[in-house]
Amino acid sequence: MIGRLFYLAAGAALGGYVVHRVNRARNALTPGGIADRVEGRVSEYRGALQELNEDLTEAVRREEAEMLRRYAPGNRALRSADTPPGELPGHG
View 1 (cartoon, helix red, strand yellow):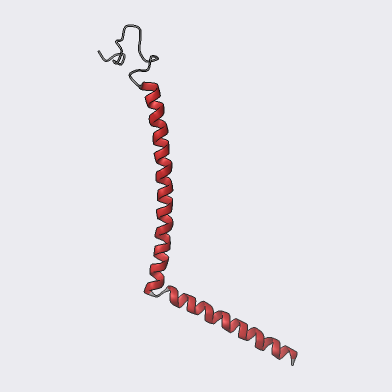
View 2 (cartoon, helix red, strand yellow):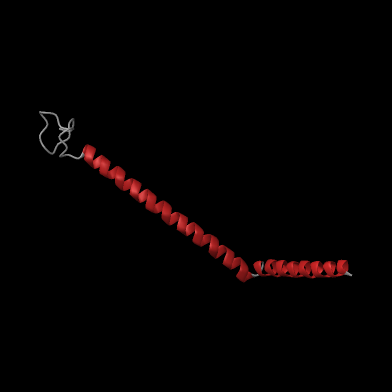
C-alpha cells in the first residue's frame, strides 16, 4: 500500500514537471517567446558594446594625452637649440 502511494505521488510530481516543461517549450517557440529571447540577447550585446566603447574612448584619450605630452610643438625636449619655437625639428 505504501509502495503504491509512493509511485502515485512520484508519478504525479513527474507528470506536473513534464507539463511545466512542455508549456515552457511551447511558449518559447511562439513569436512572443522568440521576440523576448532576441530582445534579451540584443540588450546584452548593447551593454557589452557600450562598455567596449567606454573602454576604447578612455584608451584613446590616454594615448592622445601621451602623444600631446610627447610631441606637442611647445615641448622643449623635441626642439634643438637652433629650431625656432613653434616649429618641429627637421621641418623648416
